[in-house]
Length: 102
Image (cartoon, rainbow, N blue to C red):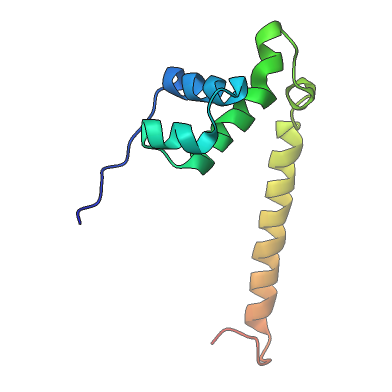
């Protein structure tokens, strides 16, 4: 049996199916059979719809309201770690222990 090509569903289609489940007229299993989808996929779409519904009315999520990490601090930390790695690689090359490079 040949595999079916991966399908990409439009956001409109996903919203339509998720709203059908939320309305409760048909179950996720019935809609899965009707639209030839897996019931877990429909349940995921329903969850996403319910989580993001508040954003339609202008509420801002708490995660997006937090300021992002300071990029300068992160770049400085990366630089320090790179220097430490270089130093430790050099120190490891000078030792003759079992972990030394050969």
